[in-house]
Image 1: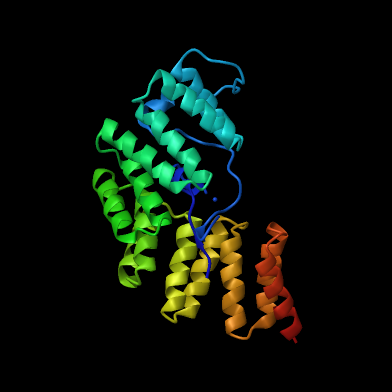
Image 2 (image 1 turned 135 degrees about the vertical axis):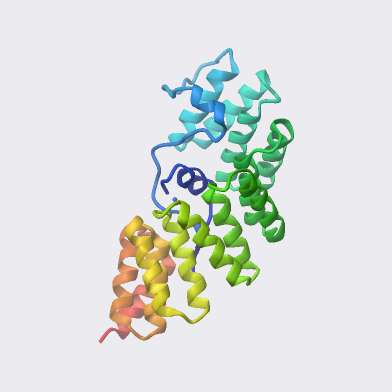
Length: 273
């Protein structure tokens, strides 16, 4: 089974949208909102490649570059902003986001922790720390941080989600199911949560339930490759090879360079009567 994680999911689903990796990642996202409250005061404009004389402009440029997927530029902008405002929690948090997307989770965690130390308890920053600890395999600590985020904001569906994924990795399936449902009660279109809840039911041998949940994920996001992949694997395990092939065809349609899905597709086609 494939699972999903990654910062873009965190943010986009926090404003009720969606994104891919081991417990997670869907399609590309065009809208990015700042993760700290005061950020809404800034309106994004075109990012400037020149030197800016205020942290606000560097902040805006960093957001714009991040939206465009120009992570090196975004990192540079946030670091320039921190030269003006070294204790700005929003800049630190957003720099953590960039570092996380670049795969440097240890550096990202350090930035998030700096932001938390300055801002005090903040649900979003705590959730970012929980997510990063999850990615680093620190599941117990991830759960603690996510639960702290939930105490501050019970509507933080992403914190519920990452706590659920951590419980999953610890084989604590009842708690995982409960937390996934909490996330879904807040956001019914949370495709990744539907997908990963399906994975839990596969492990419990509840295949019909799993199919239903994968379909719910695909209703929310038809391009969620992980859900198609999981459907293909489950059909293959049940010796329903033609249906398995159709699911893997969807994965390859969306992500043509997925070598594993292509190999599974070929295996299913060979066995399809």
